[in-house]
Length: 277
Image 1: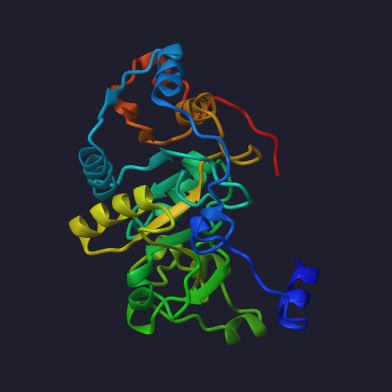
Image 2: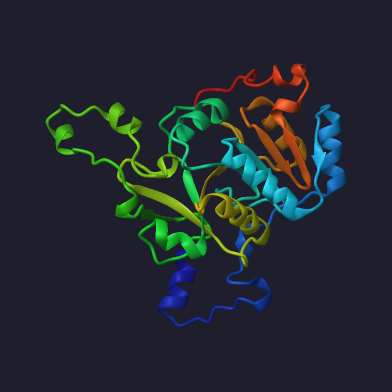
């Protein structure tokens, strides 16, 4: 990477990104394996799950968006897997960022880790500047930006920590903005921007949520639990869904609601043990 930077910026080497690759050669990082409906349905049947097949993508997106509005936590598995360290929508856990307990709930019930660990937002690219102090796209969830001042809540007295009187737990538990689940204590967030070119299917889902709520942002965290890799196959996604506190698995054309599953499956939630970090 450093050598390429020098070649382009200091020695004038041309960059060759074909038109077919879109904005860059990474193609949105969606370079991993994809799975068809037959593979997905076989994985669902193998575990005896109750599911719905919704072949209309518009109807599917509306159902997922409505579930998000109702406070459900979504495991989304769709299209090619992301290549790299970030889940960018195709192997993601999604939730409403306006939910006050969203951060602690997902950490404790799904990720099985400390409640204070932060989550990143994904935002519609054309709305990003309305929420964050940024003028740049961030399709790979690499850039940090502050939540706009008019959306912030509270103010941390950092001087109290210099004289030893500050209480960090109270700071961590205080809502920092109107989007508390994705706002760090210093009002920053590591954001991902999504547009119709980079990931059309994910953009349509986010647009459906925006139409219902006026909020162009979702929590986006990787579809896995602590100490485990991001899910790759339908079998991986089903196993994570069964064990973690995910309310709805949106996998390909299928919708799988936790509350509709047989009791013997629902009892398995939270039973798998993980090694400490």
